[in-house]
Image 1 (cartoon, helix red, strand yellow):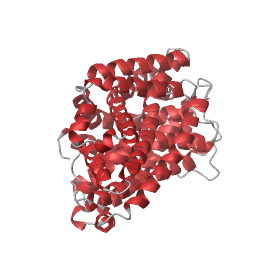
Image 2 (spheres, one colour):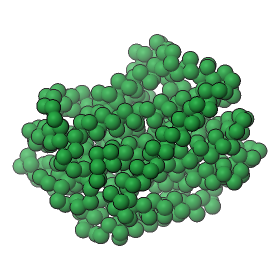
Image 3 (cartoon, helix red, strand yellow):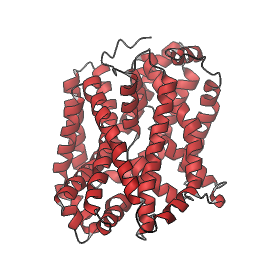
Image 4 (spheres, one colour):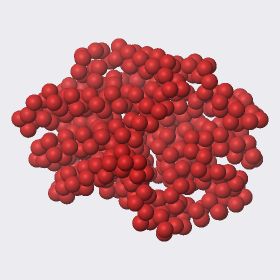
Amino acid sequence: MSNSVTKDQFSSRWGFILAAVGAAIGMGNIWLFPYRVGELGGATFIIHYIICVAVLGFIGVLGEITIGRLTGAGPVNAFKKALEMRGGSGRIGEVFGWIPIFVIFVISLGYSVVVSWILRFFVGSITGSAFIACNTAQHFTAITGSCAWQWIIITLFVIGISMIRGVEKGIEKANKFMIPIFFVLFLILVMRVAFLPKAIDGYKFLFMPKWDFFFNARTWILALGQSFYSLSIFGSISVVYGSYTKKSEDLIFSVKNIVIFDTVASIMASLVIIPAVFSFGKDLNSESALMFITIPDIFKAMPLGQICMVIFFLAVFFAAITSLISILEVVVEVLQNKFKIHRSLSVAITVSTVAICSILSNGYIDKLTDILQIHFVPFCALISGIFIFWILPSKLFTKEIQSGHTKTVSKWIIPMGRYVFCGLVIVIYISNILCVV
């Protein structure tokens, strides 16, 4: 197999790594991870999460990137070719490949709305309107009202301009610029929060495990789910980005760095949010209000708060926009390579459709997105795992990983993928159905 279907590629190893890191880092790291840490025993959840991403997260991302590079295609054609390599009907694989496309498209609608909120908070923190608002909850309600469509259009227009330039000149360059700045900005916030009164209480919570949570099944299941969600393991983004990767790249080295940077981003977000919440006596379990109501209230109460608010929402915007670019690229790829539509038109169709659907569904998409993330995202991860570790010939899979890797690929990757990865995805899926978590 070759990458001849997809002409545009990442130009360098670190260009690919930063693009994949940008795809992974998003709301799962900045909002959901600190919330889970606060809910499930602080350091205990972090330990569980690191174990999950080091073993299962690594296997999942490696598998998806590998099948993408091997087939030179996104999920529709990748799963089709995997079945054809087994002598089966590629048509069945194609049908299953459309499921992650549908799921990622619906997720893009809700994500576009959230990114538009972040952009508006960022602008409001610069102008001072978000900072001086007497009631942050009312300000947030006003932002999410009927006039939000303008910000959705602005957000998607900016993304479209970036994507239309292609993989190397558009996606890669955007991530090379935004991801390093994201880490620098969050590092500034980490240092600033360290000087807040009572911040030490937050650090104690973060780094002193609560052992009663350690053997709690719910903690393990949510840590597993968080690792899949944070690393975007659902048979789409990593497959597409893998298809843009050169044969000479060391996939094992790249995936290790993707997992490390994504985990560091989650921990840095916790180092900002949790000590700040403890310092000002706020509620860490405020769920969706944490980012848009609780954190702005904290910035209002601290010295140099407006500057910190600007830095925070700029960093969050960079993280969110790089994730949204990767989400939309899944749709662009299938339009380009399945329907042979020129990239410019593919981007225009994707961005316009998402903009219209996001505006029309604003206020109604939340419930559907929740259903997809709870039930369909694990299902997509399971589909991906089955095609990669059970259907794709193991010799071809191992050979593809070996390409660009100097050491002999370990034999444990296939068994880990087949039995541990797929097995635990089934556990997560059944737990979600039974509402165990």
